[in-house]
Length: 230
Image (cartoon, rainbow, N blue to C red; front, side, top):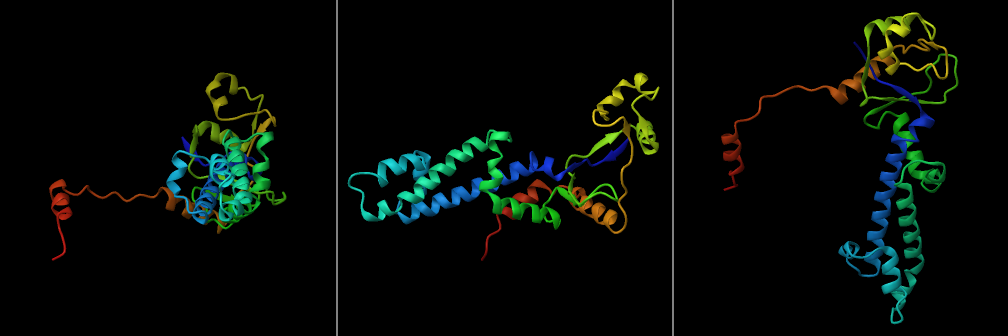
């Protein structure tokens, strides 16, 4: 077997992993904004365990006896309620109806892609292109999704594998590794050169490299946990 890490176009990465990362950061940003808004109207964060921004808006801010401080927060809570509803829809996953996530979270998307391009996003490795003469449309290597190829199949792909190759009908399990839907050939389309190949291997080793140490003795652990300053 030969191990490999799959590479996907940036556009496709944004539909799956990128989408989830943007959504996670948007959710955290929304939670922070809600906490800040509650603080401005002197309501505890714990109120969110029983109420939503929509119910807070109706129960407190739009109440007949609400003071000026509460009334001034109406616009902010209307916006927060809209974002909560958007997040609920976006959490259903990527779709044509949910592509507006990238529009509403443009700053988050830009920061995420910059982290990716500058190799500051753990688990992913950015490549400007795969083919030497192609445009820099962007590709992402999924470092956490390492897979494998049978060695015999890899040898055939290395020299160019035709969809009509006589071996394919006798190796039906190979079809789990290759797909001729878009092309009649499986073949190398590019080659990483130095220093990029070394940098990729270094990044991969930082993610997966492990040095094993023996487990400490439980009795000694308990004794050390009992240590207190004198």
